[in-house]
Amino acid sequence: MTEPFEIPSRLLRELNEAESKHLTYAQLEGFVDSRLESTEEEFVRAHLELCSQCAREMQDLKWFTESCRYREVAAASAAPSPRRRFWAVLGQWFRVPSHGLILAGATMAMVAVVAVLTKLHQPSTSSPIVASKAAPTSSPSTAVAPKQESTVSSPRPESNLEASAKPETVLEAPSSVQGAMGSKQPRYGPRVLSAIEALSYREELAQAPNDPETRAAIAIKYGLYGEAEKEYLKMEAAGGQQAEKARELLKKLKRLRGH
Image (cartoon, rainbow, N blue to C red; front, side):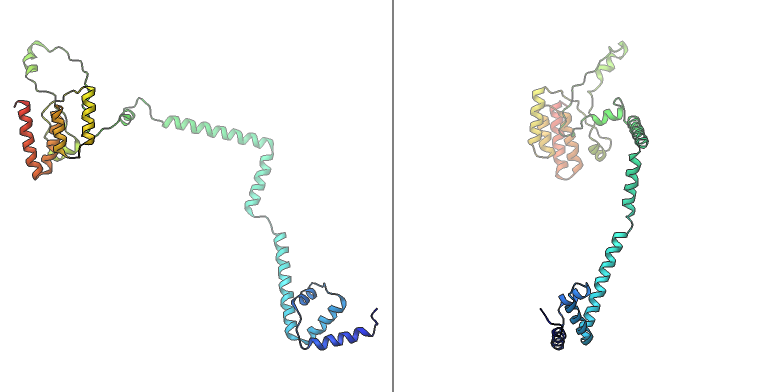
């Protein structure tokens, strides 16, 4: 057991040693938090009275500790954010049964309004615009003349001679060629191909290069002089050597047609 007179002597020895060394961080932290024993606390207190550097470090540590505690208290007592408060109020509103029924009715009304507006703005399937959009488009170079079924009424007696003298039906030139050639139109009527001929014609066109002269030769092979004349119009619009080849092609078409 330590005698009472030994405590002051030990403190004096520790104070003498304290003059040559500084306090550790653990001692400063324990002193600020009041976690030291009585003898250790007296030693630290006595050292702080002698050492100004350790006294400054103790004051800094004390200020830092108090500021951290203040932030924790402020964060704990802070009011909830407006976003959290909004969801809390909304949740309480939904807990009321009558409010849930009101929301369900409003949702059904909105769905009904959207369905009616969608039905009103939906285009009719019998509309000519929809029918024209639904029809598949085909390139003028690869299209095959469709079979035209038309009911021909018997001509009147006085128009028999005029009917026999009428030329064949004339195909319209493509819009791109028509814009380049002005009012020029193909002069030869279409030839209706059989299913096998049409298939072969399409296959040869697909394998042939995108050259008007080659495509015209394929059309002449299958007797489609109207398609050949379309290629002639393209060659004539290109000018230069293509125009010269177009004139040769026109002569060949005239010979084939017997003109």
